Image (cartoon, rainbow, N blue to C red; front, side):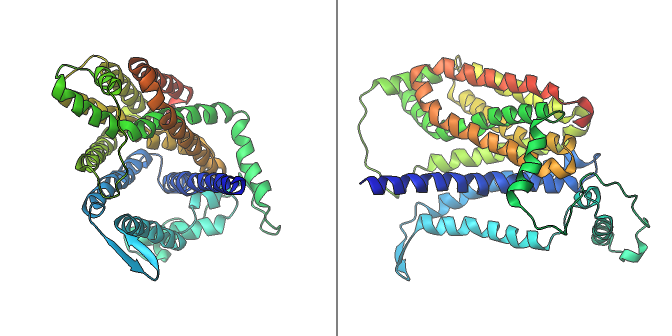
Length: 389
């Protein structure tokens, strides 16, 4: 029994490490990599349009799940039991494989090459980008050479030491002048993830309990509805694989559509509003929505407030990453975004683990604490200089 427990414990820790590396890592790389291909003038707008694919995924995945998961699919393939959820996992892994293959064909960031002393390689990448964008041959590239400006020297003659390279990239982030930015961005990312991902995990259950309570008491607030449900005698229900409520998929599709609309709005307003001001508006609106949940009783309004407070902090994940891309030097940018995204995932894990207990303890205090959390994130964004946002 002890061996089995240790085996499960080790597997659980390995799964956790894999989740951090497979989720926080790729998402951090995409923000840093894509941002370095954009000029400062168009970087914010380009990041907003790129983020539209996140919204499309949030719509497509529950849509595919809605079509596939309720189906009664059971058969054997080479001795492996195939069910609807296995097919679903296989299908959603295909884009990851395609993206990995596509990345092998993409060039290194010319900004990174330039600042690391690889001037010719950076120049070649720029000419390749020019040809792809204009359709003209590389010989017509209007720039003859790049002025050498080495910030981070790469010594290709030495063997690479992974641990030494890792420490060389992460250590500068936690000493001045980058220390305050790394800590502020980490706390901000953890705060917005706590709402957008941590609270999102409990959203279907909250709405489900609110729906059950609405039939008995149409004038109940969210906290009153949760209190009424938890005060009833609970009965254990057996887990049935194919017993999936359609509302679970519908609610997630609605969240995806809200993300899509929000990213479009960000793309249009960011140039004259600025990332810092846009972040502030999102935090204030989300915090007010959380406080209003303590008082409002109309179910449609409550649904709208939940969509708003879950969506806007999620949009700000990209805003924080963009701020880091613009303020952190190129040779530290990828690691900086990765560290910040890891802090965000930690915030999501902690939030999703405690929010259920907190709602049982005191629902109103829980919503107010989440609102205070977002207001703290709002204050921290002013640590970053205005010209970087």
